[in-house]
Length: 584
Image 1 (cartoon, rainbow, N blue to C red):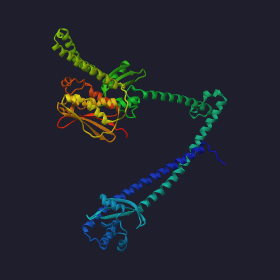
Image 2: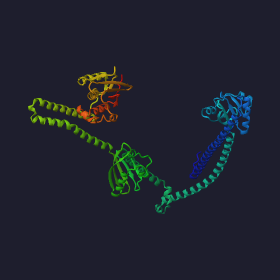
Image 3: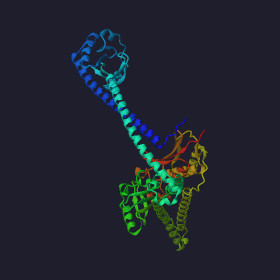
């Protein structure tokens, strides 16, 4: 037979349950606290005892016999009211204050007792465990004795702790019972008053339901207690619909903010953060809990705060400033003042845009500079020919050869520009597959043999057998031709160029070593930039475009490798690149 409890009964039972839980929690906490305090005091006392006992034994200079050591251990143990044990370097017990000499001689080895092991290893060992000898819980502290590996140990029983805790538990139980009785009486009175008030409210609510004219005279607390279930449920349903709509709107709004590429921050009139999207947290390195905190606590950029002040006066302001650590970031910000107070800041990182603009300007300037010399030479020579040099065959040949040479230089520059443009635009079709590196190197050396012979140079292989690599045939050939051709072109005549292979597990490193004048290490990081030259005059004299190494870097990157340059000793350079090794 089930018994239905009213509000008063439920309130009464909940109160009792709450008090019981609190009493149990207090008891457990006190038990834990007192146990810790007692154990700490015992540990401190044992520490003093063991140091005193060690000093006494070391002063006594006893022979290592059970008869001599046990007698002193008994006296020291009685004076300290503790168990004192002496163990020799082999783990044999020489004395114990609670056992006679015969029992001590029969004791098992103590070499593996945890406190003994810790004392020998760390200078002090502590342990709380059950003693099979005394059949009780003990706390031990052991320290080394003498310098031969002997150990002295002092122990105290935990009986006092257990007795004290038992007394505490009894006191807590008695206190809990008395508290529960007093609380039960108070809960009964409170539940009676609450039940009486609710009954009066329900009676009045029924009266109002039967006579709508009574609504105007309904007490104010009726709307708080919700006696009319139908009206209350309708309000709850409407509230749930409204909250659901608001939650969906907030979710959509938050999703839009977090997926924006721009950083969005909203501030109130006092400069405190009221809204921060994900991109703003990343850009300004903000922690999670920042809403309600002043922006000045996290971002100390005078330009930004000037924009906020300007927007508060004119309702809109925009500007550009640097923000962040090295490398510095260029930030473009737009601040809009709100009619209701506060401002909204929209920021986006324009570092890459400014970098691209700078690259574009440098590129145009470099190309213009590279075109000026050959165009000027071609114009000057053609003008000279038109002015009458054609009538002098021995001179006109020189002018025509100069025009031809610089026209070829223009052609190489245009071809390199087209190559690097296609590569950077991703229009260079790569067909990465297994390539025989032996054959590719041999073809490159053979194709440049004439150029090397003209400079009385030798290009040779510095390896016997190379593994296959994953690469594009045409791209790899262009990389090798550029690197080996540069080595031939910029090395002094009569020297040699070596192509070497270094096996690096999953990668293959291809090196082109020359005996040229070498490159200062300060230029190593920039030699692969477009139009960068270590010696501009010498490079132009050789007819270089300044784009060859940039093309090499882009092609190697596209094939999944890396590229670099190292200095050789005593002279020369090693240009290298890596490619993934082809599976066998």
